[in-house]
Image (cartoon, rainbow, N blue to C red; front, side, top):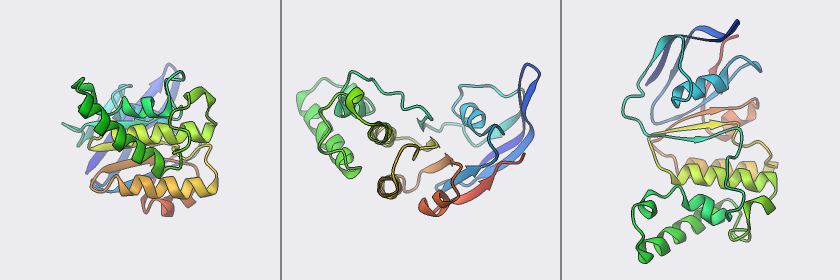
Length: 201
């Protein structure tokens, strides 16, 4: 399990959380919920190493490869959906071999099709709607591989039908992967077949 033990974080005089204790099971999906401003995103940033806690520790992260869907899509706007997703494929990055690139593209195209983007794979990301960009960001994170997947409000901007389909897509490709998802929507707990973890405060 991943254990958050007595974690404290403040910015200047603003204390985000103090002596926080949480447990996330491995190889399963946990949905983290709490009041706005309680520090959920800050905790994710500490888990991924972008922030440092003032005190306390997190046990169970040693050696884990982490992939992330941020609140912002963080895509390369001038690249196509295909090119953005392809960036996550390490086998392509390791080799300029044309055969490997073609095989990689087949895999990426399959993933983009699974989330309903088959007609937009060659379009520049800047031409896509917010919900379409969100799906590209999710596909990129799934293709990146790794042991721990962090999702910060991943279904933001998706309509009900796409939210259901993307949730199924994530579940299909994260079996045996520890997943921690932040949301404000209780319906997404059952949608992801997840365990609810309440953020105190």
